[in-house]
Length: 141
Ligand code: HEM
Image (cartoon, rainbow, N blue to C red; front, side, top):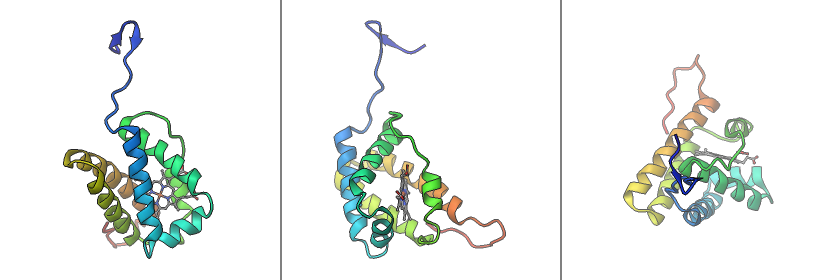
């Protein structure tokens, strides 16, 4: 049974406030866009649709971090379309910029909580994109 307060379902606790999610996403993609290797990949795919992409990413992270359910989409399919332009090393670069952003904004416990989510998702996206059962190569993030 859900806990109820005065007859209403208690709203879900928000672990990471929305304004921090917006700041995190904005700061992270600023770094991404000026990165020598990631910049051209993202700018090439997103072109003039950055405002739309950022809005989507606010919803994505709100769903991942606060279980808000406001994102609907298929990240695996979106990244499979990028297979020709992405190499496994790009995931390590992505995670480095993400960690850099987290350390600018959050205290250590929240940094670790958010980074863990990102790393797990990066792992499954990169496996989907690059894992070839016939290959003996390891994926090093
Ligand atoms: C090498 C690393 C990565 C690259 C180059 C990359 C690139 C991109 C690009 C270019 C798009 C836009 C696709 C489009 O609109 O056509 C996209 C979408 C997205 N990315 Fe990534 N990405 C990377 C890693 C990640 C990671 C680690 C996460 C999550 C932790 C993530 C989450 C998403 C999500 C949620 C979308 C939106 C999917 C949708 O359309 O609903 N990406 N990515």
